[in-house]
Image (cartoon, rainbow, N blue to C red; front, side, top):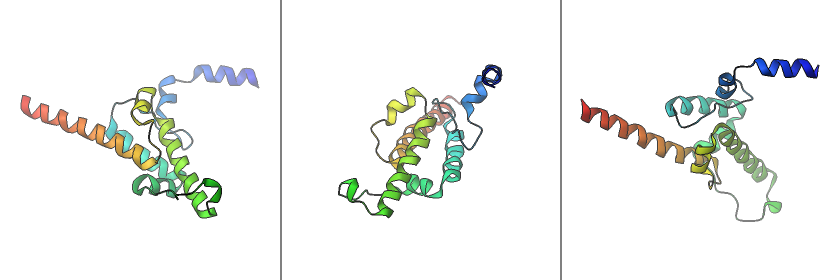
Length: 132
């Protein structure tokens, strides 16, 4: 069985492994085609758990107390933020991770990427208009 698995892994196309075409593997983002990532990641995170996406969009303020004193609901929300962060971190290349590695909330990660890449897209559109 192990030999079969190893042989099967060698025949897989590395480009398809990078892309993340499943519910268990997020889309891989290396800094190109942000518009594509944005749409796909939204639905990937929502499919994992709707609360993960709600926290990514709306954020939350963690309780001002040690985690050991959290209620069951506060623990559930904190864990959902951690899951959302994991979805985002697992989808990013090493270069992209350096951009967001100080973030503590999934909303922060989403907004940092959005600000950086939306600004880049707008700058490119402006440059293209100037050249026309």
